Image 1 (cartoon, rainbow, N blue to C red):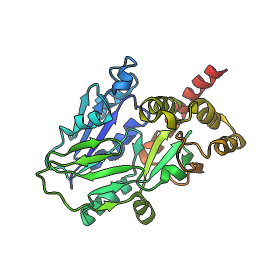
Image 2: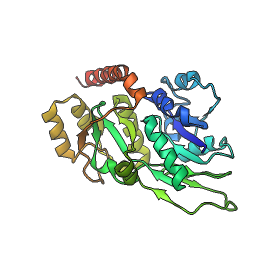
Image 3: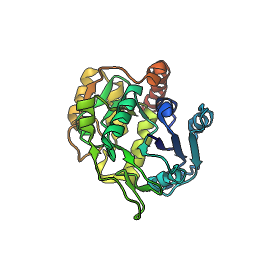
Image 4: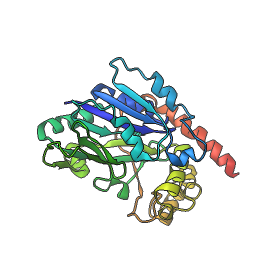
Length: 297
């Protein structure tokens, strides 16, 4: 079983190191495309200006698994295809990995065992999407079945058709296995496996995400002032304030046309790379928070 983890990243240094640490032992390849899509290029950006490139260049790679492609990309589809050019011909699966996603070792082992035994051709993974820190995560809409398609069977010459939704296509002359999908609900309910997604933790991370979503993903489906009216009041507020924020918006998700997405209290353990650096990460949240609250005062 040979798995390649594929990542696109631009200014995503928040838990990037921890993400790589969680998958490195299980990877045959880690393929990374770093750089801005057209929207960020229009803002004058040519490469990550945070610690992303430092982390990528200094990350220990004793087995030469990591291939990094730096560039400027038309969109995320184009960015995904940029790293697929380096996919080894004997790779069995591509595992779509965002820079804010971290896995437990035992969960990756379970998934590999399921792939080997059941010969799935695709896998959806439920997201435990942390919100405003490390003790709450988004429920409801964010946990819908197969919101996050992550693992795909690949063949020589495969590439990404689209990044959203994640879709892999094989050359027309390749004989592929019959489609067999493992959905995210079954993976979580039956096998206890999900990903730990630190996607709404850091204020700068959320601000940049919403700026891009509002301009390039779905302008009319995003809260017009989400960062200042939902995220900051929630992360700085007490329990009553948080409850009122969520009631006003049916949760905390940024999109208008979605089901309820109230937060839940996280019970359990974070993946080891997160636990080992939790104090450092929490300090970063507070440092960024002070900056944005000072701007409002």
